[in-house]
Length: 431
Image (cartoon, rainbow, N blue to C red; front, side, top):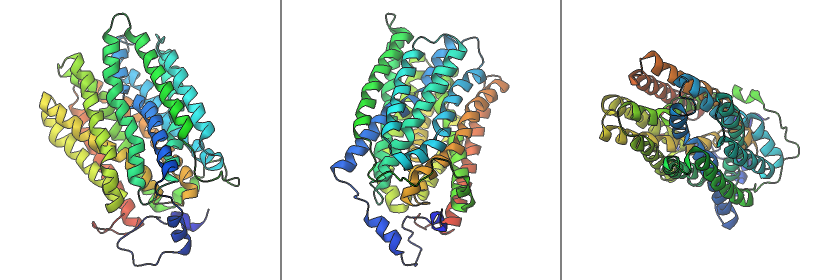
């Protein structure tokens, strides 16, 4: 790996340095559109709708199993099922990213589709704690990872100047799934003739159809790199911009998955109906849909790091100025869900673009996967820690809200440092 890998590949308005011929060649080589490129975006969006749509629906699964199959277990114990899922969804990327760089996305996407489709069918008959842990936590988590990394990385191969917009469209499928799936499952679970079993199976059939589309269209523009290693390379953490970016994303994802997981149970604890407790997750994911879709073009203009910092700041405001004082009211929790959904949607879609600014395109899969492998630890510990805080606080969510806002604040500090050591400490620097 050369030292040039540490240099940002994006435009920085404060820099007067002439661009190297290699960097200009890399810029000119991106098609920035065309039928093939947008079909990859479409396929990635369908894969995201299935894989990340399930991720954005874990609050519904958590609420249902905690009051039915696993009602005898604590919030913290149940939280380990979903934290293991999110952990594996990101952790497995440490090898999936390099495999993508070496062989391309085809077999990864196919394997992920089999894992997700099969695990949903098995999930429909789960009854015991260990059933859920293996089927959803492990099998579905690995399946999500096999899809998540190649779908987003394949989009990055065709876009540079418009990468924020393209990645936002691709990842918006996950938020769309987070809008559709909770409403669908709410109706299916409430139907006596269907219930949990057929409700989850119907979701599985829908995801299999979506993943068939993803398998048709997600492909790499670049030929496989035969000389690339399939092994992770932790030496890239010697690059300070990447190190601090990873720390910032770690803290951001740590905080992000707490409201994503507990928003429905929080609503139920405030005395809202089960119907509204399901719907509040849909509202959050609707906000996330627009948060993934709209800020992409803005990030292409002001820089992905600036876009992420603005959305983390919005998350801090949502926690301390809305959720904490007004979350017990219906207008308050709806406002919070919209704000945190919009902010988190931006964070999820723009973070891959941030990583793309720190490495050459041929190493994008490796950098992306290495970052999110570290982030996976936050997903592993964040949800059960959140559940333990609720239990220690006697069922109150006040401590959890303060904790979430504080973690977001630390993430903002990480992004500021990452930008500072990358290009400039000036607030107006485009990065």
